[in-house]
Each structure stands twice: as C-alpha cells, then as structure tokens.
Length: 245
Image (cartoon, rainbow, N blue to C red; front, side, top):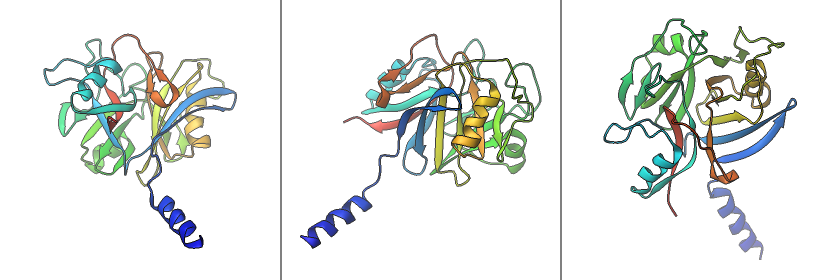
C-alpha cells in the first residue's frame, strides 16, 4: 500500500497543473475577472484577420476559424487600441509578420499617455515592455501589440495616475512576471480608475509590469466562468488556444 501511495503521489507531482486559471475576485472594494496563463506551457497568440484579410472582430468568428483546425479558444480578450477600421493604432505583429510599426511619440487619448508599452510574445515567454525600452533593446517578438498607458512600470504605477481621479470606466489589461512565465489578463466588473486598476496589478497580483488594453469596449471570453461577451467588432484579440476535445 505504501508503494502504491508513493507511486500515486509521484504521478500527481509529475502531472502538469492546469495552466489557465480564470476566476472572479474582489480587491479594494472593486470586482474583477482575472485569467492567468503560463507562457511556458500555454499557446498564447494574437489575432486580427483571417487568411482573406477580413478582421475577425468577434470571439465567435475566431472560434469558428480555429474549429476548422481542430482547436478552440480557452480564453480571449481585446488586445490593444485600434482605429475605426479595426487596424491597430501602434505596433502589431502576428506570427512574425508586422502590420503596423512602433509609435514612440506622445499623442491624443490613452494610447498617447506616455509611457505606453508593448505586450510581446516569444517562444516560451510573454513580457510587457515600456515602449522606449522595447525599441532601444531591439527585442524581436513572434506576436506583439502596442497599447497604453502602461499600468505598472518596474514595480511603480504610471506617474500620471491619481488616487483621487474621477475617471471611471470598465478597463482591461495584461501583466507579466519578471521571468516571462506568468501572464495575467484582467477586466474590471465595475467601473474603476487607472489608479485602482494599476494597483490591482502592482499590489494584489504582484506583477512588475502591466499594460492597459482599453476601456468601455473591453470584453472577455472565459468559458471556465461561462462568460463570452458579445458586442460590436473588436480589433486585435489575444487568446489562449487549445485542442478541441
């Protein structure tokens, strides 16, 4: 019996844990949905257009395309700001092909509230970089999307975030660990300020770098929670892809 128990324990210890974990949480009086993935084991990708050049726009359209490959989305969310035609505002790379260049300068709106940043996917890791640091390092990404502002920069909140701000919106974003393995996507379930949202990443999730994706247009596909938000068309989408059962 002892040998059986030891063998069972060893098998359980060796088995990979479910890397994708979606859950609803409350922090500092606000409600959030967070989905955490392991970049070392999960297939995380960016999506914008199908093979004909048509923008996917919706989780359902992307899922239908993946189904033809025997795959599906186990998670997805909007992934960066876009123009009226759904084209990315800043840097966008998908599968090694660049559609839009890096925008390093300030501009109108949240995207131009410097410092902004880049979410970069490379084999076995994912990172959030401040834009100028990313440019100067010459980092090469398989997939990348630029958005802004940064929420957390090397453990510090964006310098323009105010504790007493009156700008409340539903917000979503992504944060990464220093080793590039832990990736946490979050969306607020009530309107929050930038300061509150950044504090979630810095103080609750303990992540050194985090990037804002967008505000009122923010949506999430989280089948673990029975959630798949619908609405008008999105631009870039980030998703975790799995084989269909």
